[in-house]
Image (cartoon, rainbow, N blue to C red):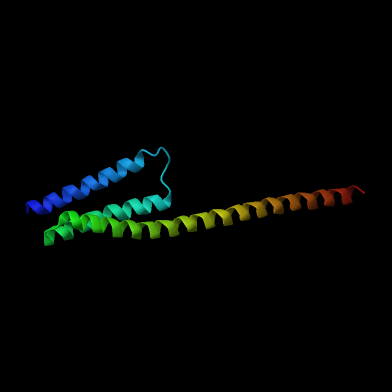
Length: 117
């Protein structure tokens, strides 16, 4: 029972260190970094719990953190790429909307000029 709580404490300590280290960067975390951090933390916690069941909570936490970090990176990277694509699409739509409004104003000006002639 003591090993179980010890593995949870080690996992929480690892997670706190990861959060503290990334929090010192001074800039907000990117989606990729958030995914890596969350994946690593969850992997470490899960690995420590599984490792405690077989008598090696430290090794389980280390392996779990590595696997979880890689998985979290992959998911976070894909999400960040999708966000960038959506941002680019929104920018193009905004530009097209401005062009439509400009052309609409030109049409109105031409109509008013025709009416006065």
